[in-house]
Image 1: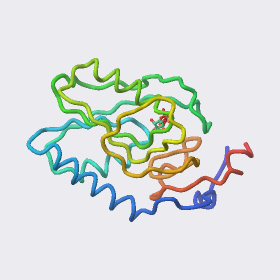
Image 2: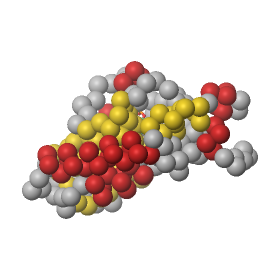
Image 3: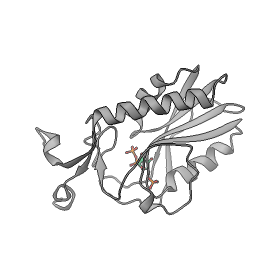
Image 4: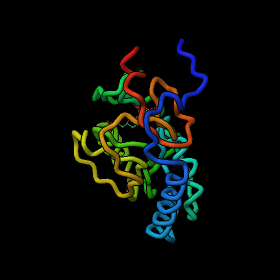
Length: 187
Ligand code: PRP
C-alpha cells in the first residue's frame, strides 16, 4: 500500500485555490437562490467526489431545501480515463416526483455519467431538473450536456482535491490541483 506523509508533494500545480473555490461557491449559491426564489429545492449529490462541494454549496443557498445522495460510478478504480460504464451504487432514498431538482456534481468530463443520470432522474417525474457542476472539462466531452451552473471551466489535465480523487486519495485537499504525471504512470 502506498503511504503518503504529504499528499501535496504529488501536486504539480494548484489550479484553484481554496479562496477561489469558496468565492465561486458563494456566487453560485447566491445565483441559484435568486433564480429559484420562492421555491423549495432538492439537491441530489453524486457521491463521492461532490461531497465537499455539496456541503459548501447547500450552505450558500438561502432557500429551504432537502438533500438526497446517489452514488454512481463511471471510472474503474485507479484509472484516469472514463470507461463509459455507469452503475448505480446507491439510489435515491425518497421520491422526487413534482420536486425542483438540482443535481450537484464535482466534475463533468465525458458527460456519460450525467447523461445517464439526467435520463434516470427525468423518469422519476420531477417538476424541474437543473445541473450544477463545480468543474467542467469540455475538451473530453462525448455527449452534449445542458449545464445550468458551472463553477470553473478547466483544461484537460488530471485534477484532484476538493472531493476529486486518484485511487480514492487526495479528496480531502482544500484546493484543486494537477496531479504530477509520475504519480499515475509509476504504478
Ligand atoms: C467522477 C465525477 C463524475 C464523473 C464525471 O466520478 O464525480 O461523477 O466521474 O465523469 P464523466 O463526465 O466522464 O462521466 P467517479 O466515477 O470517479 O466517482 P467518485 O465521484 O466517487 O470519485
